[in-house]
Image 1 (cartoon, helix red, strand yellow):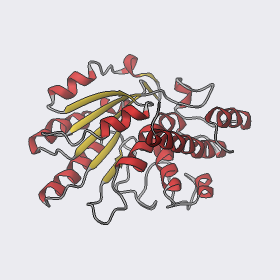
Image 2 (cartoon, helix red, strand yellow):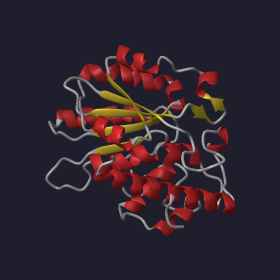
Image 3 (tube, one colour):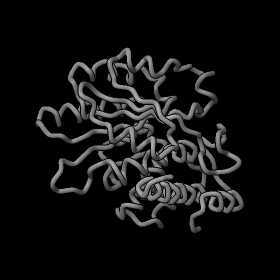
Length: 269
């Protein structure tokens, strides 16, 4: 039976998905990669990341797959940092909520959007914390299509050289990108073996199984070197009709689509 922690996180993830639907109801949005990461983000922001505890070093989060910004904004709503009504302004002229992360939004440490940069930035932050001898943790969430960028692997090669036990990379492995299936564009497999060859500690999990997500996070840090969690997910998770399709990548949802998705999520409109 699920425990109270995973049940609470499941409810939180459903609310995060509901907030993403609010954005999609206002116009075209990158909903697919936001929805696939909802369970991961729920576990990070409402279980694992230390963001408010004055007795602990503050952890860092970088959303490298910046087009999934709606799920980050949803976390800001749930953390009381922005109002839910503000989500409808995402990407509009004058809004502090961009179509990709911007430092105008509260809590955003680095503006991402050009794919492939986040791991290098996270490595630099983690190295700085290590030099300061803190135990602050640095997490970077990447997309699978993003791993086709060479800069990702430059950072992956360098990070173990510096130890960086408090650096965590998470791959949202939904196997779909804007133009089609990852395996048909630039295949990544054997992905876990690649990371192991670069001397990372590797865990593979179901990215929608909150018990597995929490279990993987709670084993960290590893004794030596940085860690990566390869999370197998479904693009557009939770929205009937677009779940598991490339159409989920960038979509505007009609009222009937929103109603059907809200009913499936079991959360209030």
